[in-house]
Amino acid sequence: MPNQRLHTVDTTVTAFLYANEAIIITDKNNRVIDVNPAFCELTGFTLEEVFQKTPEAFSILPLTNRYSDHAIREECRLRDRSKHQVSYRSHDGQYYPGMMSINRVRDEQGRVDHHVIVLADLSVIPAHARHLNREVYFDALTGLPNLQLLTQLIQESIQHADQKQLPLAICSLDIDFFQTVNERLGAQMGDSVLAAFAQRVSHLLFGDDVLARVGGDEFVLLLHHGVDDTFFENLLVAIRQPMVIEGQSIYLTVSLGVTLYPSDHVQGDVLLRHANQAMYRAKQRGRDTFHFFDPDQDRLLQVRHEQRQRFIDAINHNELRLYFQPQVDMRCGRVIGVEALIRWQHPELGLLSPGEFLPTIDTTSLEIDLGEWVLAQALEQLTQWQAQGILMPVSVNISPTHLLTSDFSQRLAELLERYPQVSPDMLKLEVLESAAMHDVQAALKNIARCQTLGVGFAIDDFGTGFSSLTHLRQLPVNLIKIDQSFVRDMLVDANDMAIVESVMYMANRFDRPMMAEGVETLDHAKALMELGCHLAQGFGIARPMPPEAFPDWLAKWPHRADWQALALTSH
Image 1 (cartoon, rainbow, N blue to C red):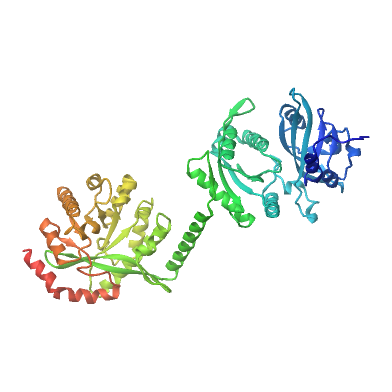
Image 2 (cartoon, rainbow, N blue to C red; image 1 turned 180 degrees about the vertical axis):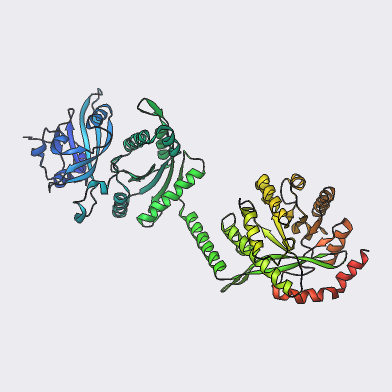
């Protein structure tokens, strides 16, 4: 029986005696020479019972997986530091999951002197569930904790971090393009790759850090120490090193998302969600990198999500409205159409303009939902006006997201069929120049298909893009609208006047009719007519109005002496 303990300095002895984790000291042949009180409490074994035995002899066994016990022992022999999932027999005679970290200590000549083994208890499994099979809590392929056990480990780690005022990092780790690897090598080889990958990452961890597999090629790390950019850069470098499996060299990279507790002070399931969000951001940045979750950015995203949900409610609860702004031919003073403009009749905030809510849904599928709602409402309004004897074409703005959907023309055809009394040429679609720039070929196809239905097209805000001349040549549009930002200041800004003149020159060269937006005064109208632009809309003619106000405005328009006089002077 032993009559003395390993000689160490006082501080080391204190740490050894009072550590929460079980610590085993073994000699160069891996036979026990000392254990601490935490080990005795955890396993029920005394030092006398395990002295000069190997850990396997008193039932600390590597978990059975694709790696044999022999392979693990060989790895321990070759590496100065290793880490393994194990099962150990507790004082109640039952087996529980643990994490065994082995550190080999060498003397000044580099010879193995002894080993320090830390056995961390992973059995946060509730007492009433301990009779269940371990498959409930561990991944069968890798032997790692699964999502069910990970959830409990996160909660325990949060409590530990709070009690000890220690940092905690939750990291979502996803293998890049693993599906391609799986398809190329086959499912069986893919499993081997996952098992080897899990083993490699486990060896890169410290102390009571945890690696879990939550599904497929998705893993989660719990790191109970301070981390920084350097730590994750080194982790990525280590993961990039080739793995030789069945004679093949396999190269993997990962995308890593990190959130830090208590900076991100939320519940465990939310921490995991935040780490996942950061991981997807790493993928968006090009993969093979890491990204830290930003709580402030997440709050902004959450607000944006709530705003979008509220906008869905606005569509479903009939809170949206179409207003209409007249368009005139200044040469004869005739109203030639109206542009449909969206408004939101918010129950608390009143009537909202597009700039107050459209940015919220920019580039999302809600743009398609809104676009289809506007088209249906425009056709419905055309039906009602026709019943009143008003035949007035309606122009509708189509977002790039909506225009470039593959079934845009098909859905438009189906919508027109629901309103057979409305001639398709009464509907005009306006597309931003940027919509054509995004995918010219797709835009060309959809515009051409819609034109075969009899629907006209205009380029809106022309001149604000980067390739106007190219688009003007390629796109078969029926009208070009000069952006109001140039028209509004053309009388006081020589640069804006030059842009308006250039746009009009190009339109004339390609034989495209033009309409000027932002016509606010008769002086604007006169200047545009002198330059050869005869179609206009703007506040000087009329502000956007609800549909019920349009018939009355239309009846009064011929009596607007100022504008009718302008028409007379053009002859």
